Image (cartoon, rainbow, N blue to C red):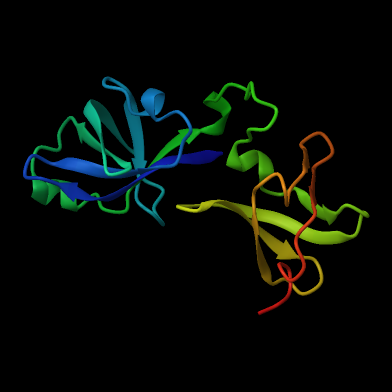
Length: 174
């Protein structure tokens, strides 16, 4: 399964640096000089490899220079590109409270009393934190649940289960 570790937001400067929105907890590993990044444009299956020449932080994002991209015009064509890794290549997490997105997707979501809420369809990463996108079991609507311990006290990969204790009104349809 493909996991997105970064997305090209835009080009930066005239030498073809890429502004990358990071989608990994290990940017220092995934975007280190010499690392080969697998790039795929959205809605495409074609993969192109890019070797990292240099990387630096800038305004909460990374500026990444890759071999073969040496000017702004070429870099502009990569806007929206997703940098991906194969989930099979990832080591198991050493932190009991850390999960890869693909581990959460497909898990059953229930209230603490066992009532079914729905199924996790996606993990969304926003500036405010992570959200679980859940397809409601009763009507199929999307429910966004902040992925914080106060609301999601239990995640059991072994049981395929996420237990939630949402504040009143969080799950109400809009």
